[in-house]
Image 1 (cartoon, rainbow, N blue to C red):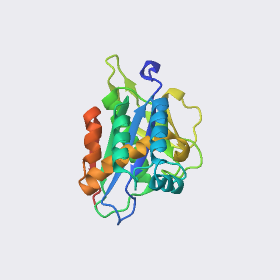
Image 2: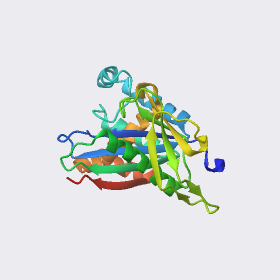
Image 3: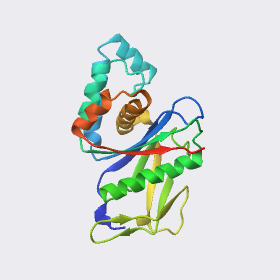
Length: 233
């Protein structure tokens, strides 16, 4: 892999909806890439200060142990302002919207979906990330995972071709330029994961509830690269 394709941006992955046969109609997986971690932290901290000015905001933050989340946000106007501020940053947004078709999403399928998101992003942006961060509950892994890129090609025109890939937990004797590291972190301690949750929740709400109030704000300042998938029975 050409090291010139790498920059300081990190990928973050989150989901909205559930994996079960019943419950939500859609499962949305959202992948963002950014090097704006410091500015994201500043925006999230500013939002927390605003929420702490009201009793409902204080109670909500206490219940979430200080974590900012899209779900049950206590003040819609503050949430819209927060999403608007985040969407103005240098953030690349990709998502897969899955119509579960009353089917359960299994662990193995979820792993393939992760690779699909990474691959689609690479094709769109002509570059890879060497690190992706997930919330602790996303795959429930206990150690670092890796996406190994097989038959990777990057020609002089910057076009990327990946014929296949696998996700695994341990690696030996593999060229480090041919894999992407995946770490799970506590979202309560990672403001970029909290920002990803807000963006993912906005997209989920558009499809599950036909409510574009938040995604319209994002699209005023940014693009959402969306891929639709329906589970076949």
